[in-house]
Amino acid sequence: MTFLRGARRSAAALAATALVASIGVAACGGDGGTGDGTFTVGHPEPDHLVPGNTTSSYAFDVLSGLFENLVGLSKDGKPVNQAAESVTTEDQRVWTIKIRAGQKFHNGEPVTAGSFADAWSNAAYGPNAYEANDYFSQIKGYDELNPEDEKAKPATDRLSGLKVVDDTTLEVTLNEPFNQFPQLLTYPAFAPMPKAAFKDLKAYEDAPIGNGPYRIEGKWQRNGPVKLVPFSGYTGPRKPQNKGVTWKSYSSADTAYTDLRAGRIDVLQTIPAAKVPEAKRLMGERFLPRKTGTIDYLGFPLFDERFASADLRKAFSMAIDRQGINKAVYNGDYIVADSLLPPIIAGHRPGACGELCTYNPAEAKKLFDKAGGFKGTLELYFSNAQPTYYQWMQIVANSLKQNLGITDVQFRQVPAADYFALLGRREEKGPYRQNWEADYPSAQNYLQNMWGSVGNRMGWKSKEFDDLITKANSAGDEQEALKLYNQAEDVAIREMPQIPLWTWAGQGGRSAKVDNVTITPYATGLLVHEVTVK
Image 1 (cartoon, helix red, strand yellow):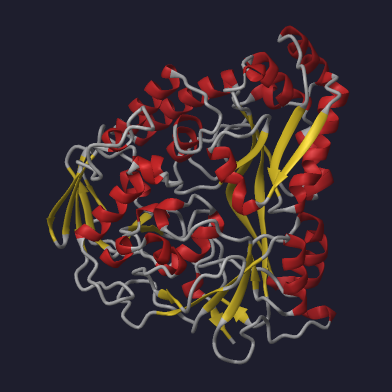
Image 2 (spheres, rainbow, N blue to C red):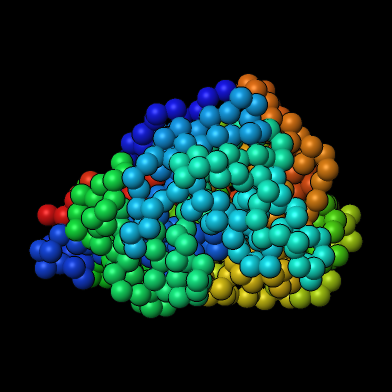
């Protein structure tokens, strides 16, 4: 079977946030508003800027400009080659990747097959404790780098499934056949790294050296702006149409929106829900609605025995009025979840979650009592990235109090940059907000990653679920694969270790200073290179 031979990535555009010029806002736009061809985007603070050490979309904002993966996604979500010339296989288990010659890192080093092998092994090496470690679990040798005894030092620091045949050829052997591998390669963690990076990884994170269309100017100052400028040595398909972008960090989405209105930034990918009616009214064509694959969930820490009962978890799900929250917090614009998958992903089945995702306080109380109720303080965890998280958590808390009789509910609000690290350490003591946006458009990306490996912060394990995912991953026919993915979804719904809530409505905007702004529903998000500056 052959994938992507000779294909080139069509540039998928980035989406931006809107400026309210109609209320007297300066049309010159953000911090770079001096006619220098640059623009500014507001977003929450990244956690890391080493590709394999983050699963945060805020970090991906920056990394997508600094790095170029072997494979990217077109605007319609199809895999197309970027740094790769071809990605081929005969059996879906052994893949041969030919790398486009002549590519360079920002420091002048050549981009080779070894650049990818080094970066992937570094991310997969257990003692490094990288956030995206599990994304490499498909590759042969992963288990040797991640022994069950976390205190044991692995005998090697290299993935045995990676063979550097020559400078432009990488052979990848997987543990099992995996038909989604070209899609997986689009994920930012699979970017290459230069040899210079491994001399001092801490220094490298402060000033990442990539192979993408932009290079960093200066250093990354935490909670400060990250300025990217075009890299003159870039030869790939994403040639910048502007002279640079500054990513400006905000701890408050409301403040970012205020700065958009004031002309201090030019793009905001997510406008706070409470401001959306105003933004729609005042921004006109600069308000940027879009479909997304981002779903919010309420996860349970199953390593805490208080949440061991599936009936208890189902009771929580049926006690939450999703549609009421959608209207009260999100102006009715979000899509209430009826499946573990969002509507834009192949395999979504309307009503798959059935009565378990339907508001039914009476039935919820019956299940709650059957499970033996809940004793002690119920702690609800969420980050401060969006003000709406606190708003809907308040409604959830009230629902659980009124419908189930849980009287002691406490909120645990965590800084966005620290939130997923806390969950990764399993320090949460109660239900937590979890969301997932499409790393790549595949049912496997949601189901296996959220319930099986990467995003499974619940501690949930199911052999039945895992076996169905394995069969789906190796299916030769897409429809057969989707059938098996749906059967795995049914297992997760039956156990409900994580409650699906709603799919986001993408609502961003741009200033009058910029144009050609598109936000994709995938990890690439805002495609900076297509933005033009007036």
